[in-house]
Image (cartoon, rainbow, N blue to C red; front, side, top):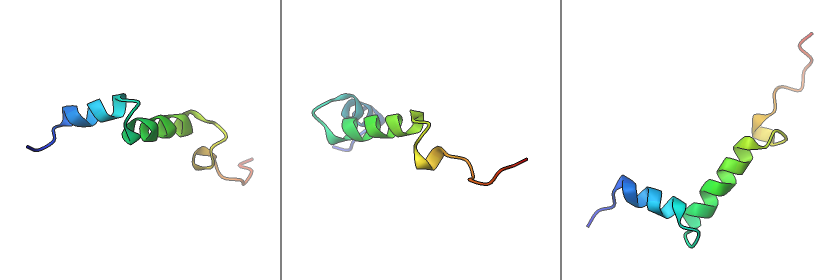
Length: 46
């Protein structure tokens, strides 16, 4: 039986599944203003 999009959602909502923690880490990284990926350039734009 193949997996459906609902299975992916179930995985990411289940704290016993690694996908849950991966999505939680990704969410936290995106909300973190100090995360390197979300910093602007280091050059002054004045």
